[in-house]
Length: 74
Image (cartoon, rainbow, N blue to C red; front, top):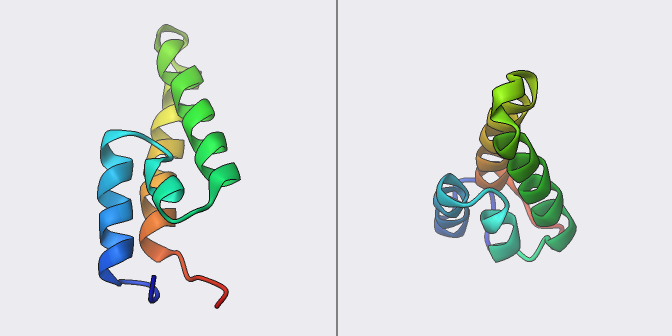
């Protein structure tokens, strides 16, 4: 992928809208994808405790922004 704002990053960000971490997986960042996914799933699963739900929403938004702003090290 080229860099910030490239078409690949837009696709990755859109993937994250539907499944947190999927955009990072598309970009080849497996560990980041796993962390974002697990934090969001755990937070959304315990939404009735309020605080984990808020953390999940923040992590979900962070995953979207992170995928959109990703610059490869190449």
